[in-house]
Amino acid sequence: MVDLVDRVRELLPSVRADLEDLVRIESVWADPARRDEVRRSAEAVSKLLAAAGFGDVRIVSEGGAPAVIAHHPAPPGAPTVLLYAHHDVQPEGDRAQWNSPPFEPTERDGRLYGRGTADDKAGIATHLAAFRAHGGNPPVGVTVFVEGEEESGSPSLGALLAAHSDALAADVIVIADSENWSTDIPSLTVSLRGLADCVVEVATLDHGLHSGLWGGVVPDALTALVRLLASLHDDDGNVAVDGLHEGLAADVDYPAGRVRAESGLLDGVREIGSGSVVQRLWAKPAITVIGIDTTPIAASSNTLIPRARAKVSMRVAPGGDARAHLAALTRHLEAHAPWGAHVTVTPGDVGQPYAIDAAGPVYDAARAAFRKAWGRDPIDMGMGGSIPFIAEFANAYPDARILVTGVEDPGTQAHSINESLHLGVLERAAIAEALLLESLGGEAGR
Image (cartoon, rainbow, N blue to C red; front, side, top):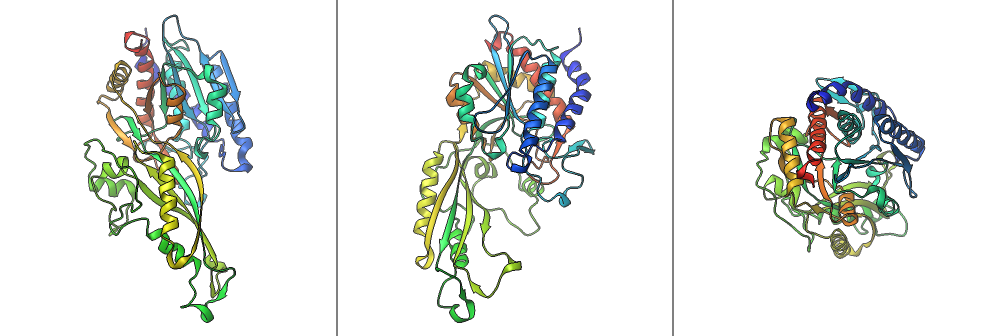
């Protein structure tokens, strides 16, 4: 009998070929011009799952992007495992900044470059490899759920969970959309920050004015907006909004040199905030200005700008409530308007943080699978980013055990230019998932 680890390794070339085919599909749901590509991506995923041996494969939509649900029934007495990934990807940004075409997968130095190679089409590849390794007949029930709008905030996920609750019900949920501590050390993600954002508009005039005639007497909206945004942090870079929650992070060393190397901090630029790195990344709120609408430089004139606006994004520490935090941010913006400027805050997306109690036989089985696949114990780590749909899964299936895994590493550059997948990480992640399915078919998963 072929060893399960060897079987995964034998399958990886074909799995990689399937992954590369998926990466070539420009499945950017955020771009209306490419929504047909997202539909084509869903069709490609459904065909791969059917070919892998899933007898029940459906493309579904509840007013949003197409998702794929595939089901293989559980043997008598065995649990059902839901394997999650998403087939939509972030926009590629400026293609000229990529070292190779963003939708043409290209290998360099053991990494596969391209948009979606890691986030999260590699999650689909991991699930395919694990299922194929069992010859399409694992010792557990397997449902694969591949979403199509995660990168747009999963707006129709709640409707999908409600409409297909029976089809998606599971004892264990594996969400392959997170990061590992390094290319050599795996991780189980046990906490994630939530997300809330808004657009703040500042108005000081009912029309533009000649800056020479009125400058120095009448405030312009852009200067007022800049001063308002500056009030969101103190001089050390800590968030200065009252009423936000702060938790405690695991005692994990994250040295300053690693921060600088992985983040790309320029020489002379210092870190912001106080507390340990992991405390600031995983357990404290963060606020970032992610966009500003005003007159572009090329169209500028000597005019006092009457209105300007910015999009503000906030990360919410586990234990906090994202809606309450958005209300606190709104109060701060309204109360700190300089010079009596008119401030209008329009709320945006909200996603709740989540923390996992990673104790019990399912998590023991996962750690054992990681140990065999990686040769190292996994680290329980927090995630500074947000995956708001995890809280929705937890609410929909409160008795299920949720495992957050992934095929990314600190060098992946997800959402950025030159996104890449470490091919060794893909292999180890696929082996770990195949071993986990095997283990959950025994007493540990019952």
